Each structure stands twice: as C-alpha cells, then as structure tokens.
Length: 73
Image (cartoon, rainbow, N blue to C red):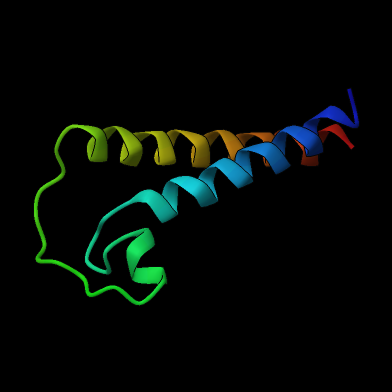
C-alpha cells in the first residue's frame, strides 16, 4: 500500500498535465503551446466543460492523496 499511493499520484499528475494542455482557454490550448495564434475568449460548452471539470476533480483527488500520504508516514 505504501508504494501504490505515489504511483497513483504519478498517473493522476500525467492526466492533469494532459487535460490542461487540451483546454482551449485564451492561449489556444495545445495549439498555443506550439505557436498557433489564440482565439477570442468564449464560454465553455460541451467537451470543454467536461475537460475543465475533470481537471478540477483530478486536482482535488491529487491533493487528497498527498495529504493522506503525508499522514500515513
């Protein structure tokens, strides 16, 4: 059990990085990382909203696992 928490955290952190790069806010998301011009600001709809909420959920889960791991040791 002691070794599984850090492995789960590594997997979650990779998923968070991927979700953040997929978001299309201001800088154009993944396209903005590679030099494409950003578009105008718009409200989140459909898949964008689901990606945003999944990012928040994974971040909360990551922090909860970090606190749990801190008190486990």
